[in-house]
Image (tube, rainbow, N blue to C red; front, top):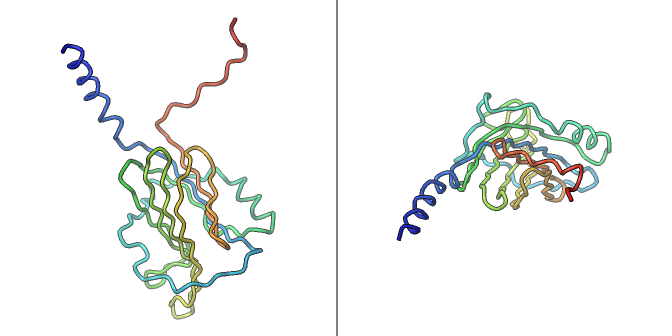
Length: 188
């Protein structure tokens, strides 16, 4: 009986930390694959960010994947459309953020979309981005769309291919301990 109480107490102490949200850095690069033909979809909806929270300026971070962006641009095979980095908490409840780039016209942007992240064994990613052509009156005349879901491994650069548009994403824990270095010598 004493063992059961001790085990119950141990579970009660550990359980809240196991399900608590942790702080992560998210970095994403939206690219167009130049060799693939453009696929024009229906125009982006006016409520493209419905249910998503906007990133606060305090959460934005300096991107660390600048060398990847340079290589992509230099290859001629890709056009980098959007490159952002930020930190946010992730947990078992999906968090949906709205991202945009370019001048806003009547609530629409040249590049706009949402990224929903949910932490589990892997991080579930649900990306929905629009690359819009906006006319001189501020109306969206045509759009390209990336709609992709994936299970990504944290701490690694992941590639989500969607035909002519693709997304590179890296999700890194800011609270998990760093891995221990490998020993230089193997003890006898």
